[in-house]
Image: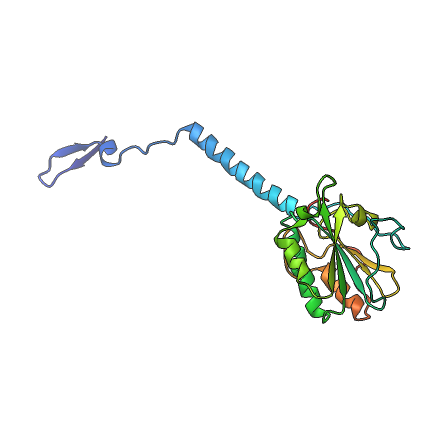
Amino acid sequence: MLHRKTRSGSVQSVDLQAVHPTTRKIPPFLIRVAVLWGCLLAGLFFALIAYGNTAGPSEPPPATGPVEHPTSVSRSTNSSDWELVMAVHPKCPCTVASVNELQRLLRQVDNQLTCRFLVYHPADTNSDWMDGKITSRLSRIPHASIQADEAGKAAMELGMKTSGAVVVFDPHGKPRFHGGITASRNHEGDNLGVRSISMLLRGQTPPLTSTPVFGCRL
């Protein structure tokens, strides 16, 4: 309660609560809900970052090339070419970025690289399972061939267990690079994989001969 004098000299009482009403407090349970919701969003955000930067399984290719087997990968028709073999899961959305990066690489090296795509399909399906946008794009790449890879057997002979993995062979059939050509899942842009392969084809020493692979498991 506040007392003040009026112009006439009389004393007037003023109720402060009437002048400045009490601020309504937020219920504690709403504060707890807001904090929990914020923690949930933060957790999902960091989980997505972790997922995007988690590489898939991969192994080095055999030093002497794939073993003789009906599913083995044969060399391209021109033994004087460098050859890139890529494992492709046609239903993997992350592989789109790998295909885009491959096309960027081919422009850098003036298409001086033949490509072989081992396109995965499950053992209980036929090759029609591979049909789709990714396979259609692969068929339009110059100096490239597509091989149906039942259950990923041919890819795994070369150590490739993740879609988007590549192995690069020199003209003598020796593997000179293996790994991925994206910096993370479904991410396009400069990366050590494309840079290393480009340097190899120019006769330079690459910074790496192996990189992580980001994509769906075969």
